[in-house]
Image 1 (cartoon, helix red, strand yellow):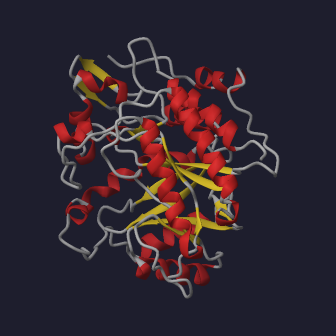
Image 2: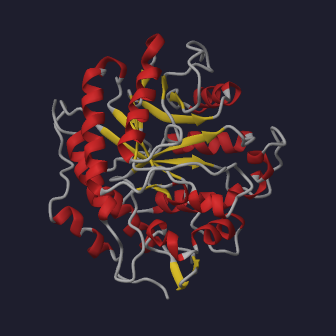
Length: 370
C-alpha cells in the first residue's frame, strides 16, 4: 500500500505549532544548520534502489523506512519516482525543522559521459550508476522552496569528475540557493582529492565565481593551507567509530573528534549526528562499501538528540575561535540504512515525526544566543 497523508499542508503544521523559530539573532551560537542528503530511495528497478529496497524491506527495519516508501507487505517495500509536490513536502519538513541547507553528494547526471576510473575500488566499481543519485538534487533545484532551504555540494573522492561536471557545479554556485560560508560557496570534499579542488578553483576563476570555502571530510590534519588545493576547514561525513551501547557514548566520540580537528590551528565545521546503525547493510550487503558486524547504539530518543545538541552547543561556545563560519553539518537527513536520519519514517498511521520534532528543538538550542 502507498502511504498517504504527507501533503504540504500537513508538513507545515510543525512550524505552525511553534516547534522552531527560524528568526535567530546574529549572536546565536550556530547560524546555519546543514544536513547530509544521500538519497538512494529509488525504485527497485534502479541499481541503487534495488539495494535499498532489499535492505529496508524486513519488517524489523520499518522504523528506519522513509515515510514516502510504498509498503507492499510485512517484508516488502518499494519506491515510486516522487513528484515535485512530494519532494516539496519533504523539503518543507526540513524547513520547519530549522535546517538551512542540504549538503548533497554531488554526482553527474550525464550517463553517457566518458570517464577514466580513478581506481578499481568499491566506490569506483559502481561509478557508472551514480547518475541515478542526482534525482533529489534536481528536484531541489526546481523547487519553489529552494530559497528557504539552500544546498551545497559534497564532492566524492571516488568519482572521476569530467570538466563538464565541474562546470555544472560551478554554475550551481552562482545560484541564490547555493549555501555560502564566509561569503564563499561552501564545498565539502569526502576523499582526498586536491587535484579536483584545484580544478574547481580554476574553473571558478574562469567562470567568474568566488573561490569556494573548502571543507575536508576525511582524516588527517596535514592538508595544504595555500594554493588551489588549500583546505579552509575540517569536518566529517559519517559519525565517529563503532562499539557504543547508547547515543550518549556516540556523542562523546563526536565531541572528541571535533576537538581533535581543532589542533594545529584548523578551523572546523562541527559535526553532529542523530545516530549510527548499519544493521540493514550487514544483513543485506552492498557493493560500494564494507559493513562488517559491529555493535551499534540503539536508536536515539528525541530527548537524547536534544541533549546531544545541548552538549554540542556548549562545545562550540568553548571552542568559538575554531568555528568561524557558524555552520554545522549533521549526519544525516536520510542515511536510513546507516542509522542517521531526521526525515520522518513510515508507520501504518502516517509519518513518524519523532526525530524531525526533536531536531527542531535541537536547532532552537543550537541557534540560541550564548
